[in-house]
Length: 318
Image (cartoon, rainbow, N blue to C red; front, side):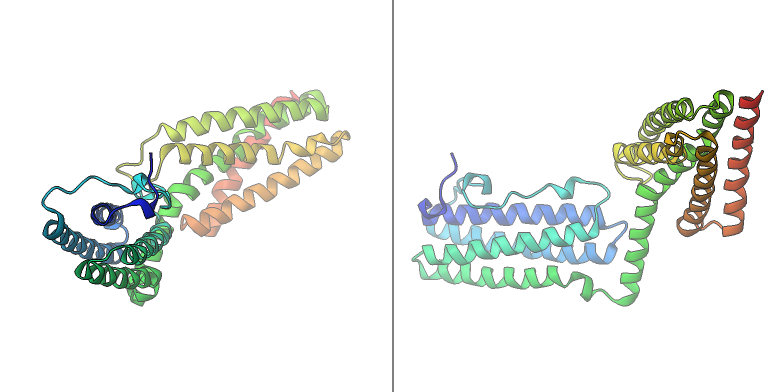
C-alpha cells in the first residue's frame, strides 16, 4: 500500500529522491530519442536536461551513502501518495513537440514541490542544503521547459514548424484526404445508379448509406494494415485507419443525405450541388497540403468525379 509523504523517514525521502531523478532522466532520454530526427534543437535541450538530472541523482546517492550506507531502498513515486500520474506520452512515436514541452513543465513543477516539502521534513543541515539547491535547480528547469519554444532561434523554429507540418500531413491529412476522395468519388456510381433506376429518394438513400459505410470500413482497414508507421513516420496505423475510414464515410454521406428529401427531383439537384462542393473542397485540400497545383488538382479530381457520376447515371438509366 502507498504511504503518506509525512510518514516517510529521512532515509526513505532520500531514496525516493534518487528514484525520481533516475525516472526523470530516463524520460528525458526517451524525449531525446523521439525528437532527435524531427526536432534536433529541442532534442539537444532535453539531452542537456537529462545530463543535469543524472548529476542530481549522483549528488543524492553520495549524500545517501554518506548518511545511511550503500544500500538504497527501492521507493518509487507510485509507493507514495500525492504524486501526479504521468501519462506515458514518451512511448508514442512520433512524439508531438507541444505535448512533450507540457509534460516537461509538469515533471519539473512536481519535482520542485517534492524537494521543497522534503526540505521541511529533514533535520540534517547538509541534506537540507542539498534539497534546497535541487529545488532551485528544478525551478530553473521548469522555467526552461516553459520557455523552450521562445528560446529557439527563428531559423530553428521555422524548421521545427515545417517538421510539425510534415508530420501532420503524413499522419492526418494524407489518410483523411485519401478517404475523402474515395468516399466522395466511389459512392457516386452506386448512389446515382440507384436513384435513376428507382426514381425513389428513400431507395437511393439506403444504397448511398450502405455504400458509404462499407467504403469507410474497407478503406479504414486498408489504411491501418498498409504499414505500421515505424519506417515511414506516418504515425500509429489505427489512428490513420480511423481517420481514413471516417473521412471515407463522410465523403459518401455528404451527397447521400439530400435523398432524405421526399421529392426526388429536389433531392437529386441538392445531391449534385453537394458533389460539386465536395470535389472543390478536395481540390483545395490537395493544393493546400499536398503542394499540388490548384488547376491540376481541380482537373484530376473533377474529371474523375464526373466520369464516375456519368457512369452511375448511364447504368441507372439503362
